[in-house]
Image (cartoon, rainbow over all chains, first blue to last red; front, side):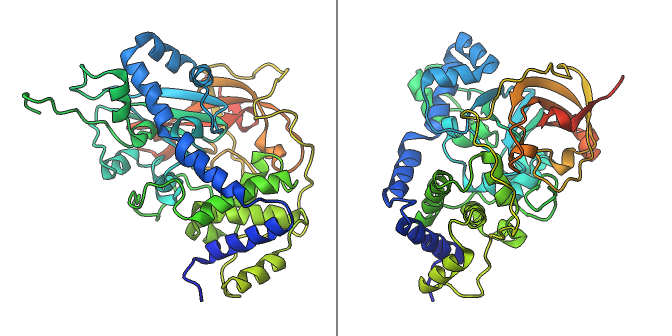
Length: 200
Length: 223
């Protein structure tokens, strides 16, 4: 008996067959791990968010035509033929899902987290978003309207989170470090930065 | 296709589990599956995303819910490799047993004995396509989605079937998954984002859900 899951064993069995048939190289796996661990990830999206927070003209362009912006930044990673960025405000909170599979804007957010692909999130966020977001740590007032975006075709969605309080003096690069992946999916609200000497 | 993959609004899946390591691949075999999906395409087992998605939808439903994302992908790629005659399931099973698997393990892939033709290769990269027909709908139009209990691949989720909504975006022409997944051509269609209120979907207030729907899924509601 092996300690590995049946699907892990089967994946390795199929891999060995494909390598023998000359259809797969052993290097292909390392290339993918390097690409998605190091070069494609949520840092790309965070750069867009931070720029939008400091540059109103950029923000306007990002909300009007995010696809052109992503092209101009030259992000790799696929899965983004057309990107739509939706803005969170104190009146509207956006969250993104793919109920039918697990579509996700790889080029700006990297590969999706496990929970994004699991049945619990995919089934519930379109039916009871307020309760689910509360369970995930996002308590929204009843005056905040929730908009859920189900990526059922090839359009990909990213949330522009609200700039947290207490960040007026931070530079763009510092702001980018505050932006989390989950805030760009819409399941986290960024909290303020504690400013020394002021009550938080 | 009505299947276990069509999860929106289904009950019983519990709480979202955000625990676990924040690594891109939790185990090396997951990256291997990722690589094999690309290799299967290069070997001619599939040539468009719709076909791959449909292969994942057709795996064993229990495996779909329990094998995880890359387990689902493994089921999809095995389905396509077997249907294309590149690798047989028995060959994989024998090799897996040699690697320590059991004969009784649940196998995700359920290849069809009479698979769809592969169809033409993609006419260009990506999925957006020029379209000569004029769009039927404008932003602001009220539309109703079809009650479309189809046996084929579709991107109309069950929870959004037969519901009234409003067109909020028009995205021009895109490959039509309902034919493209089955080797019946790219058949580009106009794509729209349709906003549904939670009252219409679930009979309760407080939120909206936007779904991207192809023109054949929709009809105009006269107001």
